[in-house]
Length: 218
Image (cartoon, rainbow, N blue to C red; front, top):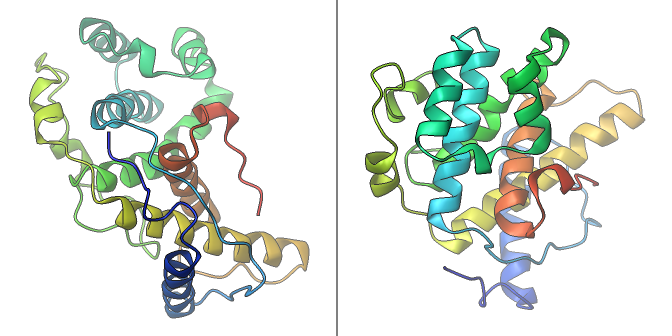
């Protein structure tokens, strides 16, 4: 599994990444905070883990948007992918409480980030919502297509690329939270959940924490 030895403890490179994040944040219309601490992390997931988590999220999102749950659940079991669900997600698939449906529907933005990290999406633009071409990049669930070809196509991007997007998401999220706290208009062209869900996915790649244990403090 690829690691980030060049980033861990390399303050000069971390500062370079942060300056790039600030430039991109300004381009997107977000204020910056020069006092934000530099992040230090390493890539903690294998390509297989990221691919499997992506497929599990795809099923959640599909069901949240109205796809037949029996088909998705059966496919997860067929492909031995239930392990890639959190306890809360597994519980929701069993009960499918409609009040929680929106929470799982917006996971499409986390999926977008993971698909980008796997080189299956060309760009991760924080000024745009998830690409509606995502369903065409995953197995055809209804016809029973397996997960093997998807896993074969997936390959994680270089460490620095992933960590650069993680840092950008952190900077953008700070700006959103700061606007909330000071009762200002929320910056950016998309709703804040886009940044939050993408940041969660990227932090999962680089923090070593379980999905439901990730802290999104700014």
